[in-house]
Image (cartoon, rainbow, N blue to C red; front, top):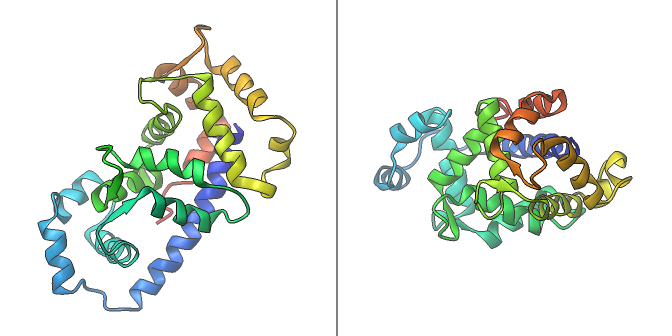
Length: 224
């Protein structure tokens, strides 16, 4: 599927950028200062809890927290800041719409901001989650209103956002078809009971049997 091919490209960009930030951070003091550690300990979930709920080590969480605080001193990321981050990854296109949808998948309590816990939990799924966990995240991305099904309009919104984000660097195979034609093809394949929507069961079944999807999801493994 073209959508997952684009996910591979983003994964490579994200991995390269994060590794650079990671290296820069490690050049500094390896330990969090007393103030930062106090902030971590007084958060709703401490390092031990986050370790158990993610696939990151304490050291990785400490490094990520330092970077998170450097970029977001208030300890939270709002949607506008999130969009600015995405714009750095894809300067050749308009990533604002796609960033909005991804932001919603990270903002688990739907309060309009992403805190550190939400950030690392979401990142853990994308970077080191199981195949099924990654598929569930992808489904939640397409299920814009969170009602448990994907409509054609919802998929069209996401696919169009991806095309806008890729801009002039969209793959030729994608440029050959309009977003609507692409969505129609996907629905023809995934909507097995022909009820006009894609259920979580249909999505998981078809994606799990697709070699392209499998390879795309595996690209996220241990990128951090």
